[in-house]
Image (tube, rainbow, N blue to C red; front, side):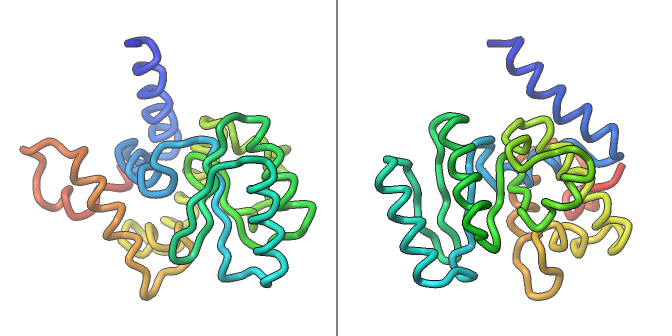
Length: 191
């Protein structure tokens, strides 16, 4: 069990070091995005037609795939990788406009860029691949918005009027040591 914990910890550290991003921030984002579940897929149902939504619910029901409906998303809690791949294929082949994949909930809007890097949507089910892609996306947000809450909100897709940073910050606070100074408590992103 210790080996598995160290391997998982190393994934966060390796990725954080590669991009100059605090690994705890990456972990906090993952906690907010998927609750650390690498097979989760979320569909923004506000962007769907009624027919698309009905078809999605029917597919999930017929296949016995667990899901929860929230304010804006259907969170699909796949039980295995085969199930998750099926869901991705269903969403992609039926041209669903907005869905997020895996540990860090990478949106399908990045599909063409990922394809150019030889990364398929199915590859995002691998937690290390997903984490590396998300760190690259977050790094681009930093380049555009600086080391501010705006970069964190941009990762979530919208800078203004987005409470996302507050959610990530709350998770990050749980990971900081009690003696870390207050400026790090407010934002602890780029190393």
